[in-house]
Image (cartoon, rainbow, N blue to C red; front, side, top):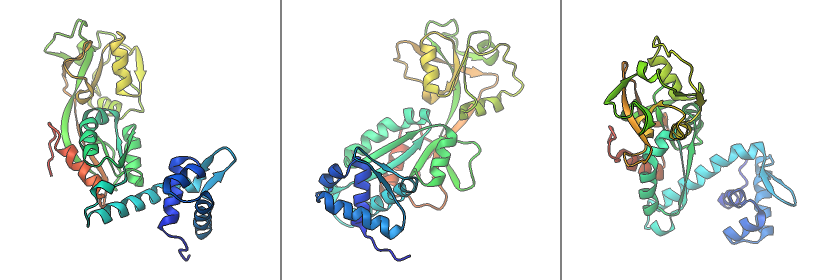
Length: 302
């Protein structure tokens, strides 16, 4: 197939998707609406597929267009950053960066890293995809995310894992709970109280089930939830206690919640970076990785 389109056509396609209409897209890239339409038609004709569905009210991606978009964004972002790396173009630096994170990693790592990154590169848009461990790994493997933040588990061969920190699971509870003042508690003690569990679709649930094989629960949980953040909200509302990863816990200054060490057994997990094996990160992704690795408490610095 001969390639009968250029970067301007790809930029037009991205603009339409970002703006949601041909009129706004034309204004954004400073061309006429008819010129924009010609660029989209040229791109679709060259590829032999329909990328956009157009009605009088809205523009939406076709299935092919939805698959094509991440590749276009990556190509244009890589080109922007490559050109800027050979000249003094900091004020013009644009592009996007996609990071897939399990929610606890997003809570712990990303606020400070994003704040620092944005202060240096304000025109690079950051897409934070917070999802389950399986979804994070799948997004990295497909190339939709530049890299991921998750914990070790059943990772596909094309994913490489680089540790950032090792953490333990703790009992989260209200400060007025009977166990709140203990130095540590056993799982048997936890099961004597109303407790909340993570649902079976949670990667944390898999880690805990493996570690606690043979430890009798004694009673049913009062509730299951998919995300740790939801569990913490239920605890704050007084519905019980729960085992959660320590990095998901708010600081000591939180007015309601606190944590107690869990023992017999102590359960730990490794949190780290997920990358697609053999893939070279963009300059923007490398800079974000550097900022994450320099956060206090990380194990890996290189």
